[in-house]
Length: 205
Image (cartoon, rainbow, N blue to C red):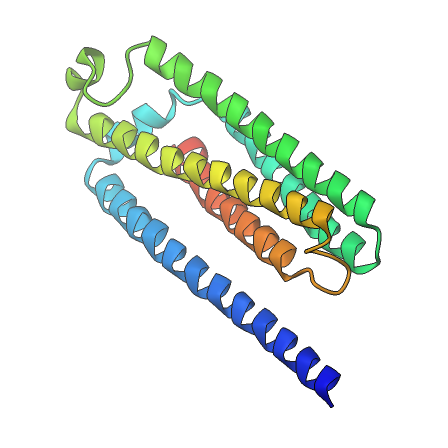
């Protein structure tokens, strides 16, 4: 009787944990949804300037980063399956691969931002202030939205590192893997946001 009750409580905790993560992800979608609306309004108001500014971004780097994030989402999902099958070491290896993909994404983003800043294109710069209002708004949104996304990538990596520690200590295991599920769910959101950011800034000219 007592063991049954204990199992039931553990299951309810998992359910609550999953619900909590879904609610958190919903607030994140509201945040980025608001920014997407702001982008849409400004784009409608300054179509020509947005068109010109978009041509200055490196589509190849944007495409490469999209492939990297999509692949990292796959390795994150595979790590859950591996853990469910009891293959802890393989699951941990897949999480490490996911983190490495995230690192590669951030390195690409660093070089992209560095190139823009080197050319004097950043909020408040003399070069940007001299440009039409639409281009100033475009690059302002570019830095805010991709910067906020990069912050989410860093948070996602931090969560995965904690999950690795939990797996090492046995807290996260074959029968208790909701923390890994939630980490992967958060990472899928990071991926989903980029899937929207990529065409908005790199493809729609």
